[in-house]
Length: 98
Image (cartoon, rainbow, N blue to C red; front, side, top):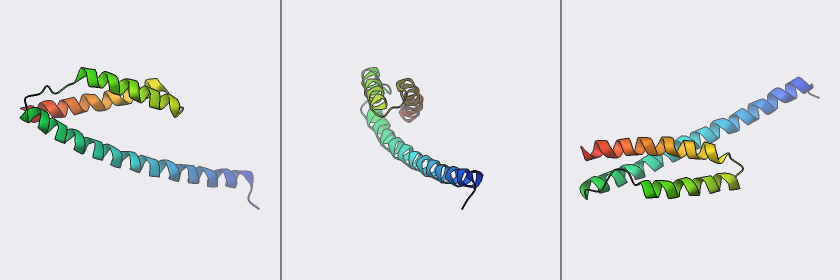
């Protein structure tokens, strides 16, 4: 029989392994997302469309906030996360345009 400290360490190890797997999945999902947004940037540049689409960004923020609430995630965090990503996407779209 394991002592409580050993059991806690075992559980800590299992939780950390799950976190590591989730982090890896997030990185791969973000990479896929950026591949898509790169294609969007090329399409926008080719057809002389603006790099940013504020109306779409507003819809996406509302959508992500609702998803976050449904998932018991802080909607403010979800919005900050999306804004961080969108800012980088727009930067890439501007670079493609040049």
